[in-house]
Length: 128
Image 1: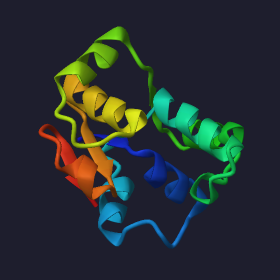
Image 2: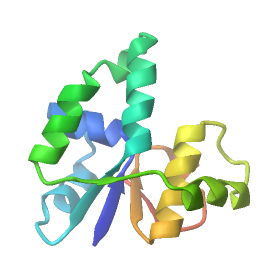
Image 3: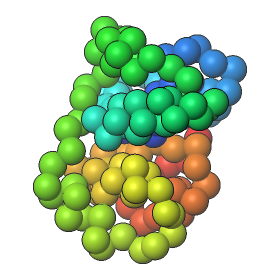
């Protein structure tokens, strides 16, 4: 299964955080699953870390290196992803989360999220 992790899951996974939901562990540890991260997530993390957000205190350069070293696949943002946001209902105001939903829909990848609002979007989304 192809899995796209939301930004918080990426941070918690890389940090080995206790905040990582236990329901996510079997999915993340299953060698049959392909784990993806969006370039938009690294952009979001960079912006929010620079703004001093406590839940985004991670060095994005180290996070990127860690993700790539551990076999995660980068999903670049394309024009098709940006345009797909237009068809989404206005459930969530965060443009980064909306873009992740659009990427999951366009690419047919399951988005893993801890965000209940994001999980309410139609499409291949799974709350953990």
